[in-house]
Amino acid sequence: MHELSVAYHLVQTASEAARRAGAARVTCLRVRIGVLSCVHPDALEFCYELAAQGTPVEGARLVIEEVPVEVYCPRCRRQLPLKTIQKFCCPQCGRPTADVRRGKELELASIEIPSSHQHEDAPAKDVQGPPLEPPQEQPSQADSFPLASDSQESV
Amino acid sequence: MSRVPRILEVRTRILKKNDELARQMRQEFLAAGVFVVNLVSSPGTGKTRLLEETLVRLQAQGWRVAAVVGDLETDNDARRLARSGAPVRQIQTHGCCHLEAHMVQEHLKGWILDSFDFLFIENIGNLVCPTSWDLGESLRVALMSVTEGEDKPLKYPGLFNTSDAVVITKTDLAEACEFSPALARQNLEAVRPGVPILETSAKTGQGVAQWVEFLCRRRGELLQPNRAPMTSLRP
Image (cartoon, rainbow over all chains, first blue to last red; front, side, top):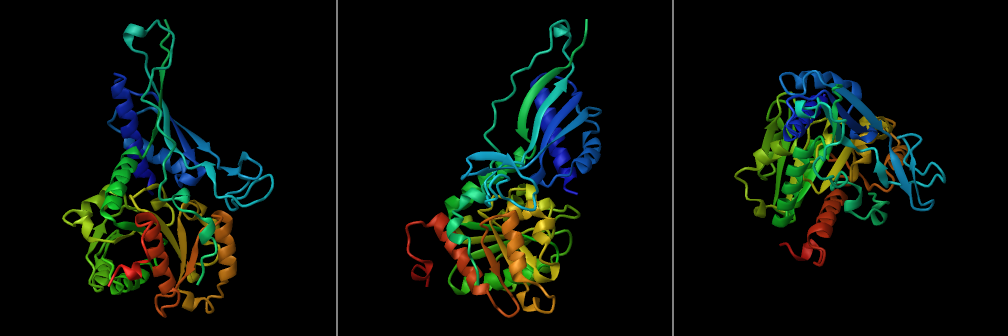
């Protein structure tokens, strides 16, 4: 049940974003969860309510977007969604590919905060958040090492 | 006068704190010349047994090794591993199902990283939860034993897909379990094309030398790309 740890981190991240924006509370959180992140949406929802208690996020709606796995096929030169995560191959030509381009996300996409009083009559608009982060780094995986030479490791 | 909520783009990784700490730790490890291996498997796969053998063999080759081992309770594994003579510390998580970067960092306090060539992190026995947590390692190895069946990779694709190598353990029991190494390899290849696969039996020693050699080669590729094989460097 690592979702509880994830939920605490989520609440912390959202609370910090709200504080930076000068908001006392958050009304909605939108998160993106990759299928390969090993985080279960239902479990996260359950833990989220617990983790949110007594924070600016308490009572905020949690909207979870599940991100399907997409792989890149060097032969077809296309990024396509996997048919099944039991087989990592190009859905078009069938060639195996370990080049995962989507599906590992574990990300707080946005939060909703009540409009502040001084802006009550102004139309809702996006506020500039912190600079965009680089793509999720997973240095212990995949591209750290050449694969080809090791593909037939055996004893 | 409507009170339309404002939407704030955040786009931040939820585990940013862990990831940032892990990245900083990785830099420190590499600067100190420590090759860090994170061992992940279900409980009972034989992580500790293989690690016992690994620590002994690496030290016999002159490598300086250390290990931190995670469990919910007890320091049984640390005591087992310490028999190898290597510095070992136990992380007791008291219920937490995975290791996080700060837990590892706390348990490295007082150790001088420069004095190690290899650091092993034996994760909590769990094939799901450790997947999301970067510990600053250079190599994440998933283990599966022949007693668990060939379809483990299909049941837990998340972990196997995000691992750098896989070790099939307890091969001395393969026949008794009617375990098919070919089928296991096929399943691993399906969820992680190209992943290096090793087969070991820590009990009989079969495949352990290849595993140790694999670790040394990976360390060499990362830390000493222009140097000769370590046998000529180490007494």
